[in-house]
Length: 227
Image 1 (cartoon, rainbow, N blue to C red):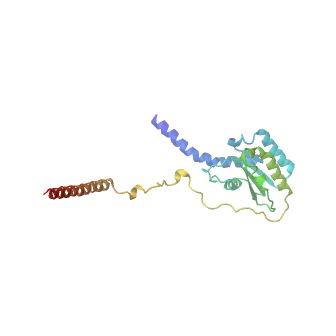
Image 2 (image 1 turned 60 degrees about the vertical axis):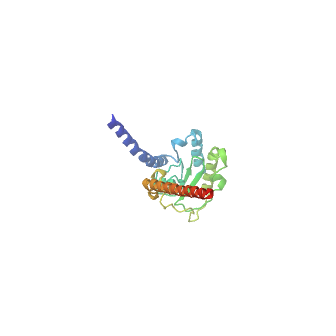
Image 3 (image 1 turned 120 degrees about the vertical axis):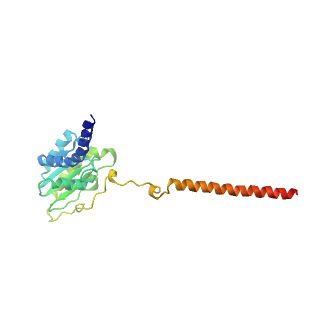
């Protein structure tokens, strides 16, 4: 029985990192088959009817280059480190290479746009990219995406496309991989217990000697005053 439990535990520990990495592969596979991929955990954010409208609006916009929309929750344990732009770059690495607008939608309903190998530049207004504040943001995903599709379709060729460079700095380690630090002094700097006990004993003895000296002096002075 113990052998079976140990085997199951080892399988779970090995499967967790693999699942975190495989989710990007599944997203890329979904985008190869459709312009829209919604992670199972975000299906509540984009129900079936909304997904149909997004694909319909994209077709009606007739954007002259590839457009992909991926709705994914942030996850620190994969190669994106919980950063949307890293996730989009990692997904693009798994897709065919070509001029593409890759749009990420996070669990809050915010957008992240990645303009890849485009020879045209365009700006998406802040209120479209991030939407209204509060609970209304997820409810506006469909009309905001429609606006992005229209802006992309109307963009003119300019020979360049401006965006932030691909992140190359190393990711911060996960919390469980970081060394633990105490707010106080570390145990290595603290004196051994026997030193503390010895110091307390010596301090107590010295205090007793001083008090005994005061007592003797007091009795001596009292005896002299009576004489």
